Image (cartoon, one colour):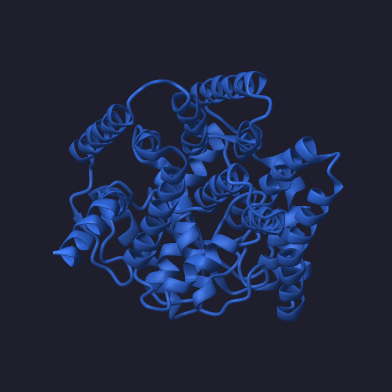
Length: 455
């Protein structure tokens, strides 16, 4: 009888995590498709680690890559996209469990804000992993855990996305500027993973490539990129204002400062996705306020569950996918017919010319083509301005010049969209290829060019 009670207690205490895991896995499976490029690239980077490629040297990744290394571990079991989604679902569940330790049943409201309105915050990218680490930091601060450990987590933030992670050091200086002992311990904790990472880069011969892509390349990224959708800019600054107000009224709560630093995740690209992850993290401030109010935990938790299920049901109704993709490594990718047909056309073109010569793809879908054909990634896998290092466009043009007798497949929809509305797609590189190559095939979606040398 006692054993049965223990089993029942274990189930009761952990069923909430099973619920979160299942919601996450179903959402990631059915609400993502081939056009979710950030997820595709992050899967691709993890796949490249699994394949044993050298980061920065073999493929153009512009973050230190901790998230992708972690996610590559599960790919040794299976590198099908479903395994990647299972790993992300586990990470979402772990994130929820930390929030639950801080706020109890109110945490289901956090789950709702992650889900609203279309589960974008669930997207498997380094930005989500960074949000997870910040939540872990907030928990460690509240529990007054070891400063060495906090320093280690700060370093992990930098190794996840350095352009945001460096700002997360600021709250420690604000709160403990006079406590040199705490700062020193955090510095030592932060230093250890940093030194290990630098030694790793030196051993694999990737340090200069890392410095070019992740440090010098920032100048190209900032000058050539900037995506501003007015409604998301306005909503983001409303959240920023609320964040600042929270700090004004809660000066001694370090959480508000960490969340404020996370706002930099949106600069210089204000998109719905970046707004979604910032909204999810900002919801912790609401939970903190509610924690001090005399409102039933059961009521708020129930409200969070109902709102999450409503959001989940709404997305199931409007999802445009028709059936699973059923191609190698993407058996469980649920996609709409247009995306699926577009993808198949690209793969057919790639296979058609691959046997004759080297084929390079300038399309955001190029990474998926490489994965289904079990090929290694290269510098064309993220064909975006700011993703080739310092003076990257010229560097890639020189790369084209040095490798003549190559086919190039250019995504004309991305090309035309960027020409008309602006964006990150490498149109200057495409222009050089189009101007100096022979046209082999032309259609609405993709053009094929053969480059024999500069004209």
